[in-house]
Amino acid sequence: MRITMIGTGYVGLVSGACFADFGHVVTCVDKDTSKIEKLNHGEIPIYEPGLERLVRNNVEAERLFFTTDSKAPIANADVVFIAVGTPSRRGDGHADLQYVYAVAEEIAACISGFTVIVTKSTVPVGTGDEIEAIIRKLRPDAEFEVVSNPEFLREGAAIKDFKIPDRIVVGTEDERAKEIMREVYRPLFLKESPIVFTSRRTSELIKYAGNAFLAVKITFINEMADLCEKVGANVQEVARGIGLDGRIGPKFLNAGPGYGGSCFPKDTKALSKTAQDYGAPVNIVDTVIRVNDARKKAMAHKIIAGLGGEVKGKRIAILGLAFKQNTDDMRDAPSLSILPILREAGADLIAFDPEAHHEAAKLLPGLALAETPWAAIEGADAMVIITEWDQFRALDLNRVKSSLKGRTVIDLRNIYRPEDMQKHGFDYISIGR
Ligand code: UGA
Image (cartoon, rainbow, N blue to C red; front, side, top):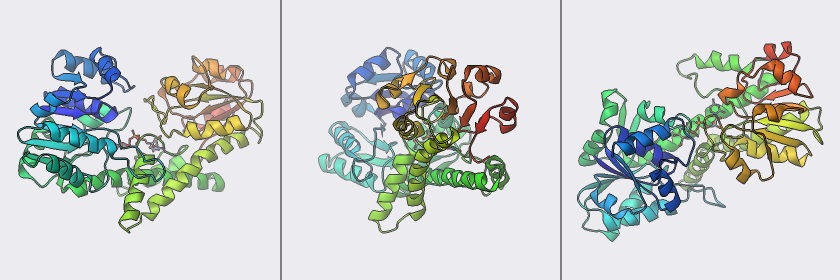
């Protein structure tokens, strides 16, 4: 298959590289000249485990190409994927579709022969219809089918999620398009990954419903954690106790500082807007959005309380800034809600993250950044873990004890055991235990 991927952001780049690895010939197109130049020199603009090698191997095998010029790649493609961003529109929270529609016009100008046009970007219900109308208007002669094929990749585990998916969702009722999409994903059929064929609108909604459900699940366990703290129960045991029920399932029940990232916050808001527009409000999701926003800020007050109600002049070592481990992404990260409140209260912050310093310099200007976790901890009154990076999971606790000036450790990811921490003489505060 000749595949053209428009947009080399997170989704486009990972999907493009994985399709090339399946043996398809993939051209990734992006308007950002410096990004394409970097990619052509083997430089990967994001941190994602395994991606650099995957890109390099497929470029060397001449199956993966990068360019800024979309004309020939669109004209020659069997399948064109749209993988540009759909950020929250400023002011109203609707998904901003300007980039998607601009790509639809670009595609209309160039397609030739039967072409399947696939939305990988997360787009509200009805966007496929609009894309079809745009292309049809500009090119009444063109032979094409618009298909929805949402992605379910987690940052930090994206290649695994792509190659061993729980399911593939394809929204089209056209037999020719179905056949081509089957061919695109054939290597995964061989591994018996289930493929769900459905209508385009249903497929568009599946993506939002999936992310919203996971956001509900996380928020539910976060509220259980707060209740556990009040009643003297343990949230990890509650999660295990309910998660073993096959109807509930054990995943996405880790209590923490609230969900962040480039997807859940934006997609829950967009779903809520769509639901309001259609007069079928999603009250649970609306509540989850509100509770999660409040939770991230509440974490700052938990830290202040943990330090005796006063942080003015106190040095606090922050471990982890990214919204979760294995990514340099800080979009809607809990750290972005927590750190400004601590600063405002007069705390002297010094942070370490294995990958996110570049983003932190942009999003939290002036924040002191340490070269190692140890440099952050040395002489601090408290250590606060915000992101669950593996390298924070097994710190030498004796060394932490002797490096810290104070004894307070606040662990917003529950990566240490309360018994161990007490044994080492820390004042240890975690979530829901
Ligand atoms: C999420 C979905 O998991 C993917 O399936 C989806 O494709 C993607 O959004 C998307 O729409 O593009 P991602 O945002 O990369 O992926 O990260 P997750 O691993 O889902 O984590 C999201 C947030 O929830 C993080 O802040 C994480 O720390 C938090 N989380 C997750 C918890 O607090 N507890 C959990 O048990 C799980």
